[in-house]
Picture 1 (cartoon, rainbow, N blue to C red):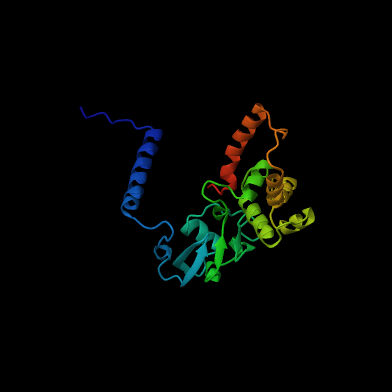
Picture 2: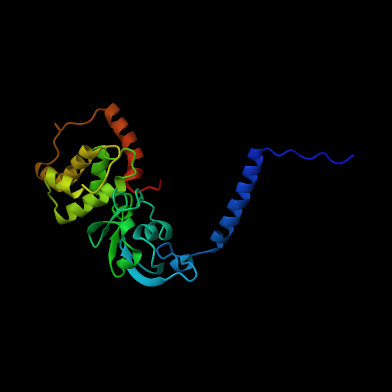
Length: 245
């Protein structure tokens, strides 16, 4: 009498193959020790594909790498430098989710080729914060409930950053005009405008408080409101810092 075949469920089969694939892909990565700032993009270039050696600065770090002539800036940032805070929405230069700063000016990274950035400087949403300290603009987005679904937030932040860099004290109309190229499918435009105006006023408010000193009569949030706001801010801060989605 032959051995009875062991029955394997579909779940067991998928779990087993998933573990094997994970181990196979993780093995080579464990032996590969490379600086995070300069991944070897030459390994990513397809054999025979036209390519160009470029040098660019991204968030203050210089990169010298070989890129395919067909790569967009968004592709370079996300797929080859690991900066996934830059989102790809429409991929045809209409929604603004992929907005980054190129030499201080907002551009759609899905519509700019990587080779065009040779010798230039790029800033993404990951470059806004200073360690664990959010940029005042990011903090204002949190406090004014800017992010909703969060997908367009990084692009909104970069357009706003570009505006405040050239115009530190814009009017509401100027904010609206500067961010007209960024679509928010949650229709949270008013909150984004409020957040940018609040960020622009941050320095003035700080200076004013410094002159007046600490007042014991200042208005404070109640413990329940403060706790709720802290919980909300902890959820939103990952989005405004450019967390992967």
